[in-house]
Image 1 (tube, rainbow, N blue to C red):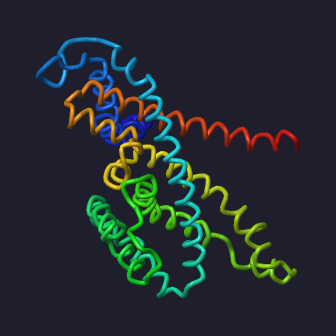
Image 2 (tube, rainbow, N blue to C red; image 1 turned 45 degrees about the vertical axis):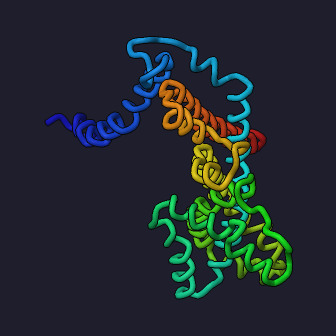
Length: 287
């Protein structure tokens, strides 16, 4: 056998899997998005071609949903990294046994359905939930505070779903920093704040940037939080896809929104990668 064919043969199973599970569905999604919407019964008009759906998603309503989705993803990513980084630092300082307990509590909810988690958050933060009941019983408030069915509720839901992955990723970045560096900095008189600002944070930048990209790409597809814990003003692209596909039965429009969501995620990842590459290239050119 020709040795040059061996790498191709080894790649074929993975390439076939990617083609069947990713590339083919994307092309089918694009094709469905070009079908005309149904007139009366049915999900679409077969054997038709039209750009009508793409014209519809770029009106004021569509632009509002796209902007809301982008802002929401940025907010969730920011707070997930902020809280996740703090949790990761706290867990790093714990003994090994307590680390295991913390990670068990952090990751255990990921073994159940996210839908169950969201319904649990509804019970926890609802008007008759544990938090409002506790605040009322301690006389801190006189009536329930609206913690869900608004923007805050949608944020809480998506942050709760995202933060375990962020914490785990940043923790792995933190423990890769050698302890001798901290010892040397402390020995030279650096305070805890200086150690964090001059050593911990800069050495975690690659991990923070990576998880920031992944977090935004994940949260651009936010669905459960905005749908069950938010209100209609928190509609995201994923919620609109659900609305078009399962409530209205307009599959071409749902496919069009899916194409837009996929294009948004890909464009974001490409733009951030190019921006980071340019930022890293400038100091090298200055040298």
